[in-house]
Image 1 (cartoon, rainbow, N blue to C red):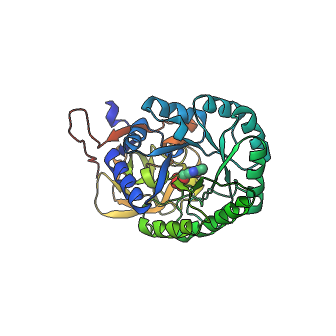
Image 2 (image 1 turned 120 degrees about the vertical axis):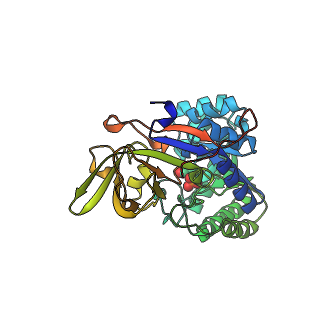
Image 3 (image 1 turned 90 degrees about the horizontal axis):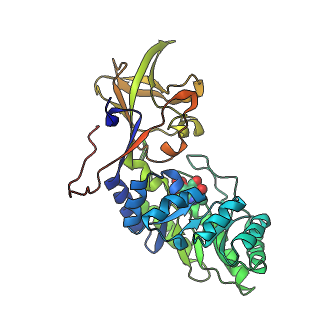
Amino acid sequence: MRRQEHTPRLLMDLDAVAASHRRMTAALPGVTLHYAMKCNDFPPVLSTLNDLGCRFEIASARELDLLLPLGVDAGQVLFSNPVKAPAQIARTHALGVRRFAFDSVAELDKLAALAPGAEVFVRIAAPDIDSEVPSEGKFGVDPGAAAALLLTARDRGLRPYGIAFHVGSQMMRPAAWRAPLTAAGEIMARLAADGIRLEMVDLGGGFPARYDVPPPPAAEYGAVIAAGLSTLPYPVRAVAEPGRALVAEAGTLVATVIGTAERAGRRWVHLDVGAFNGLMESLETGNRLHFPVWDSLDRDPVPCHLTGPTCDSQDTILFGVPLSRGLSTGDQVFIGSAGAYTSVYASSFNGFDTPFVEAVGGSRPDGTHRTLAVH
Ligand SMILES: Cc1ncc(COP(=O)(O)O)c(C=O)c1O
């Protein structure tokens, strides 16, 4: 079997990544984008965004290792994971990272010892955590505690740099940014009385991608955010950390049917990809994330339960999804909007292959473009 025919395969359309970046920068004028690379760390995706002037957000030192060969300036990278192992702080600081998130005194103690003089930003809790992909509730403190922590940071010789929040991934309500921006303004006002002027407000990620239904227009997010930023007591540098919105729609998972079955009047289609080797968000969302799906026969659709290759019954991707009648072993199924939180989550549980990631689109050295031809 030739390599490009091997499945599961995740095709990343680099032109689509660039288009998403253009859409977001247009919708958020004056906001600097730092791509949350945890969501897809495929080097051609990283270099496409780097070439477009996008900056980066990391959650670990190993992510920084992928950025440095691209010529990314570590001094412009945000290390936004609020709790970091001491060795990760020391290593990234030695490599030039200067901006670190935190939400506890214990983290400040580590930062003061291992990244002296660093610029630190406090993570505040986002009160609305009803995003489509459950992802919040673990990090962040209330505004009073945040102000106190930034004062403690100053006492430890660190530079109180900013405030960050994350409204939750695949947030379909632009209004979710309102309350945390109001809280950020309160903290800034409180600290001004103590002679501290912050430089950054970090709007986090959470910007949605299109799955089965279109999200609200990007401009609606831009309008709420611009209004929120305008109420801050003094101007700051606004940054955002989009992940999913930049790469989800650019990805198509190509899978092969490994078997079919009729069980209790339901048709089951088993693929060589499932929750454990690429589609973990099916599991995380209780199958509520409706990836667009189509297949190589493309005729006479009937409802099917689409499931993965493992022996684990939690492995199911979607229930009652229309696929061609007669779809059988060896046919292909395509899963769209699969560029975010797929390959990076994949494990070889039960001995199955993780997706081979391949770039399509984008300029090639000979100046031509390849196109995605799987529809
Ligand atoms: C700190 C931080 N920033 C940004 C993101 C990206 O979120 P999204 O992919 O929803 O844009 C995440 C995701 O969990 C995160 O933890």
